[in-house]
Structure formats: structure tokens, C-alpha cells
Image (cartoon, rainbow, N blue to C red; front, side, top):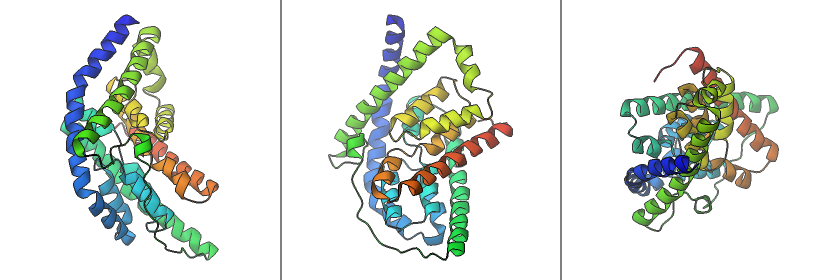
Length: 290
């Protein structure tokens, strides 16, 4: 155990400077484009799924929260909200960068998530239109004040200045990474790497189902778990993408606070989960390699 703990801490220390630099850059980008992103998605109209998917792939912790509140006020469509959730990768990007993952691999994964977000968003909106026509219901448009839920979930969208915010977020995520790496390293030591891989890898259905389920955890930890499992060769790239498709950060937690109707919110989560699992299964079946 001491050897595992020492190995885990060494891995974490190596990541620390890269994580901080990455989050510092992300903080700068987020503070510069936060308001522009909100305005862009408000004005997106029928092109919402495209705009939402594109904005979602940018490293903005609070954007899924903003999109959730805009949907709760019926400012954006359900398809646009789903597109944002699907394209958002939460903590994947800084972890990948700190682990020196090839930019080609990163862009391919983001590109796949972007494409899935756009397609799924339009399909969801089309389905909503058909349902509303059958029920003869009209959506009432109303604006709603954006809530501030990120601080209590340790996200980096506060107003304390980019340096302090980046440092706080780096330390918070480092703790998650250390815990998850320790668990993974312990399991590898106790169960064996090949046995663990056998549970997840080469499982066209089980892998994406489990990863997508982990991704639904309304916390930064979800994407940290999934990304590290992929980097440790525990899950396949299709399972990684399935998990990242549902990793909408605290957006899902905010959904249940701001959007009325428990059943409606559960349906949204189910739609998100099914899209992620189906996407993972399709990617697995076509043998995608990144």
C-alpha cells in the first residue's frame, strides 16, 4: 500500500504544474468569452444545437449551468441543451493536456463529441416538434435569471481573479485525481490489470453503459474518473466517449433545481444517457481507433 501511495503521489506531483498552467489559460479564455457565449446561444434559434455544441467544447465550467438555466426559462430548446451537455467534456481537456496526450487525439475526440451533439440536438428538437404537434401545445418563452451554482461545486467560474481561481481549481481537481489514481492503482495491484481490462475492454455494450452511468455524476469527479480510466488503459475509446458525452459537470444538478417537473428532468437524463450509450456502442461496432 505504501508503494501504491508513493507511486500515486509521484504521478500527481508531475501533473501539478501542467494542470495549473492549463487552468490559468482556461480561466482567461472563460472570463473573456463568458458573456459572449451566453448571448450567442440565446440568439441561436433553430441553429441552437450547432451553436450549443460548438460553445460546449470550449473549456467553460459554468456554461452547462448557464445553458440549463436558459432551458429552464425556455430561452433555448431541449435539443440545444442536450447538444451542450453532449459536447461538454468538463475536466477531460486539462487532464489530457497535463498528460501530454497528442493534440490529434484530443481534436478527434472533441470532433466526435461535437458531431454527436449536433446530430442528437437536431433529432431531439425534431422529436419535440412532432410531440407538440400531436398534443397541440405551445411553448411559452420566458427569460430567467442565471443562477450561480458553480462555487459550491468547486468549479472555476467565480470572480476571485483568474490566478486564485485557477489555483483553487487545480488543487481541487488534483485531489480528485490522486484519489482516483490511488483506487485504480490499488485495484490493479489486487485484482490484476488484465482482469480489470477484461471487465471493460472489448465489451461493446457493458463498457459504454458503465462509463455513461459514471458520467452522469453531477460533479467534476465524473470526467476525472473516466479520463483517468482511459489513460490507464482500463476502458476503450468508445467507452471514454460514451462517458464524456454524459459528463455535463454540475449542469445536471442545476437542472433538477431550476427546471420544474421531476419526471421531465428524469426523461432528459434518460435521453442523454441513451444517446451516450448508443453512440458508444456504434463507435465500438465500427471499430473506431483514435
